[in-house]
Image (cartoon, rainbow, N blue to C red; front, side, top):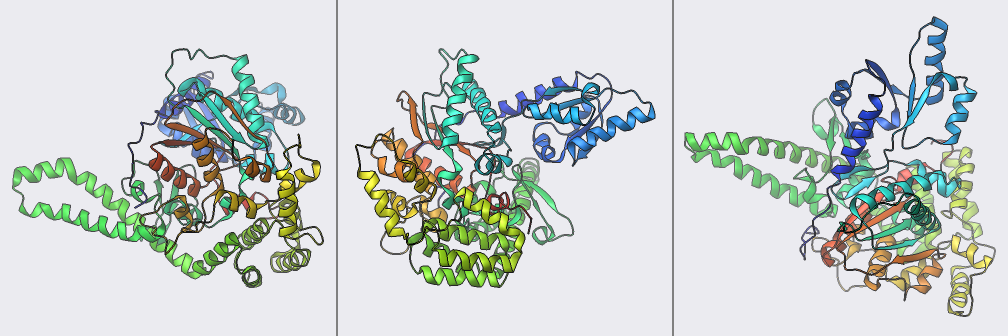
Length: 590
């Protein structure tokens, strides 16, 4: 199975410290207003807050009532103005998290309540979701930065890195790729210079750091996930490290909220597995549990007492979790069978490999015409475009027209956004993939060029996926069938059809300890690669995804870590998948 390790893994830092720091700061802010108080919480902060400080902790610090706020400025204004009209005198404090922007003050001024409220900041940048996953819970980062060019969150990421470096560093070497990654790195170092932390003599728990923009690798984020955790996310939507399993999973009339992390003994063993291996594992687990229960039959009173006091509670908990994960698997199977998932995967693999393109186009057209799912149809269109370096004008117009007829003309704006992001583009008249690769090849071999021309930069906004795939060997060419139970490389996370580009880049750079030898790949990706710091032998690497990270990438890098004797820690602006990524580009929700 993919979870088998080949080398001893190093011990991970205790990221629970981040929770404790955030909780202490929140408690301090609450105590600034002594006495009973009501707390109005923005809807998006409810789940992260629950992971940091639950209701009982808030009650201990005199929070009387909790309210969920959907419309922030309007709600604040209504409360203050209603109190004014009724002649009530109260104190109002707004706590901005993770930080206050200048526009916040402008809104308060426009609403006429600037002088009636005080404000503070809760520097809640980092939420540990698991022993190796830290999320900034900023799903808006992708749209704000990559689509709208809003750089406000760059500083927030820089502050987060500063905090991590002071607690678990000093980081000895930094690698990165992408314009956002470069900006974050520069800003982080400015913060380090302005607010130096004494790390002299401090033994680094994390040695190297790798910063990566999401737009370096859109393909991986667009592919259907087939590892268990990824499928759970695609099917049920994991939110803030937990998932709501409905009646179809629980086999009852109620939903259950389940925390998905390494503490779940069942989940921790199947999370990184290809879905085809999961049922077999769960069946074996059920038999093992039954055997442990059956041991009771031959016990005397003393043994039974020991069994009940020491083992029974744990077995019952494991049995409950096992039932939930079996129910989740059955639900996933039903949904995927209904959606003709195997045909979908076959089309994706054909697009990745560059085979049967006309057949793939026909499948996408049929998918659009049957109105299966607006998001899935968009996803396939984007995969086709990226892997083919843009669509031929005739195909682009035809597929766009069919999509708008099936799902509505309001998606014109969506197509504009996707084009801007480089996700769904149209080739220039007469420009084929071969012609593009020929241009790229010419530029790549021109060693005398000090800087790439503007023409090449615009070319870089397209994907050049075929060239990159060839250079890095992203499509495995092994003989025979790929054994998903005993995977040989990271391609297992996509059924052996494709090694995630983002993960392959990280593997190659860490092996070389630099970008040397990857010049052609970096130029095809549009440049913006960098490396700073000194070389050192490290076993824990922090990987920072700007714009979101998928569970497939996490599973792939966990596998790589086991193979190389490393541990990867993931810091992401948010956990994402193809649906979340594309929903952020849609102007009118379908």
